[in-house]
Length: 357
Image (cartoon, rainbow, N blue to C red; front, top):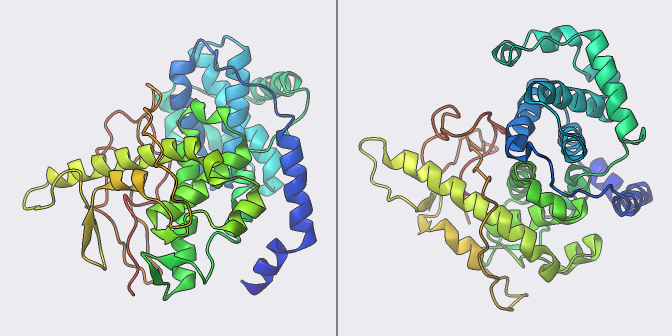
């Protein structure tokens, strides 16, 4: 852990980060004009579930979805072809981001249960043809930064021993870092689910994932000077993106609580979240109005999400001691969110636990 911390503080990591920031200035424009835009969430989830099955890195998953967004934005593709395009985007991304031995093989892909449900059989010739078409469309350039490429650099200083939790000093820095990483990963997945996040720079989305995680975990100051200096984003820069992430979180918690209320013998009221370990009860919408003492400006208004947004499903977040601390019961991804085509994540809970003081 100490060596890893030293690496992130070294000059090489800083140079890579600056190169990514420079490259994101030259990203292709996205207009959101695909005729199949209403199907975008379905295919983004398809990429996510296949990526999770093969345990690909987040950068490969995010790059795969971004390639899909760019391709759909430029071409009118049939639904059947979009299945092939989606998987080809993920394969290209995995070849770019992963080691060769981790790239999904054709035989393994065809053996997936979802392939038979889609009535799709991939062939070597078909994949090669589609990959060539994609590469020509992107001018053979897959060096396209996404929010996932920035998150680890930001997480390296996202939690500091001088931070306060609910106004109290933290008793376990490593435990706090664990929860910070889990929530940052969750918010990254949320950003994949709505094409509206493409209107923000990837580095800004990543920074917004960090600040919303700090809000949910009740860490203060909400956006400390060290993070502002590292990311070059102020609190005001992050508010529009962070609001969308927090509203999605709020919707997920309400959905989980709704399922909790439907279980017999439960006393918890719908729309409330119980934080185990402290006895504190609060509505999640309060997160949208929380301020750091360091940032006393007016609370931002609550915008509406895009019409095609659907909340993600949460499951359980495991604490270091192995106990799952969650709001309500762990949710079955097939029953908790009826209108979801695929589960994107399998590692996150509905709301933040409070740490023992």
